[in-house]
Image 1 (tube, rainbow, N blue to C red):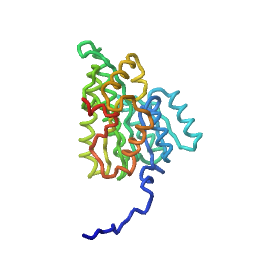
Image 2 (image 1 turned 90 degrees about the vertical axis):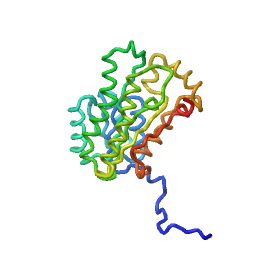
Image 3 (image 1 turned 30 degrees about the horizontal axis):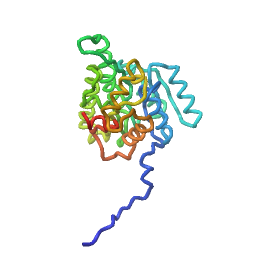
Image 4 (image 1 turned 180 degrees about the horizontal axis):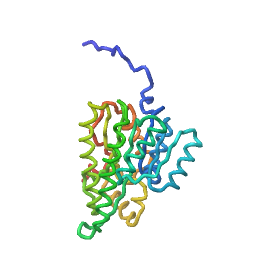
Length: 266
């Protein structure tokens, strides 16, 4: 048997496909936690950034840091649960940079507690930000995204795997994000050339996982996950860059789980 050699060998370093040079990347929830890390990671591979969150002072501090390293950055206060805010953010990005190439739908909140005791307003707010906000942002940005663009919806392993700790609103919202991801991929990938995927983190250090009860969470992860620890920001950044960049050009409608093996044991 003879082997054949491709007539079209790769002409570049495969790692180049993970770069975002000259790409305009919108990151929501960029004032703290994973969003800060995602913004730094995108900047490190050449992206132009549009950073959105409700806390303007933190946004500006991050923007100043990134600008000092040579990254072009636009910031805008945005509550993703408000449709008008999302539309205004997309319009500002296009006015400043001409288009949007990548949307990282990262904004989110989480409140743990018994389903029978959870404040209904907390539940509603979680759904409004985590699920509805993801939809409003995708809807606002898609008309301004050229063929080859990418939407990365940050969901969670808890969108499809149960946790020891009850958090109905958070789990429901993230399961909804996974379903929304599949539907938007079906609508937009062929018609518009926009890939839509979900990133599903396990437990990483963030404001949500550093709140009250964090020690119990660490114990749970240590006892139930294969790697037995929380993840580190850079371990998620590489997955985010894969989904955002041309490295994942043959991938859409999928959910990439990065959880240290937690879901494999549930």
